[in-house]
Image (cartoon, rainbow, N blue to C red):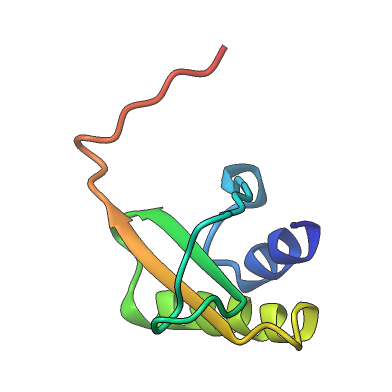
Length: 92
């Protein structure tokens, strides 16, 4: 998780203080109909980044996952835009 944080931070697409990294494991899953290993990374960004920025971030994160998880069968990164008008949060 720290390496993914560093990788995302180094792209300059997001400010380090805006990056949150969370992990979730699954007991029940299929990958292409088989119980093969996988790591899927979902990145949610407030809309406004260029396609080039999102590709840069996606490729950097995928490269980091390849280094960290060389034996994992399926590695994927999904970049999603969040609506900045509808997104609301509260910090305490």
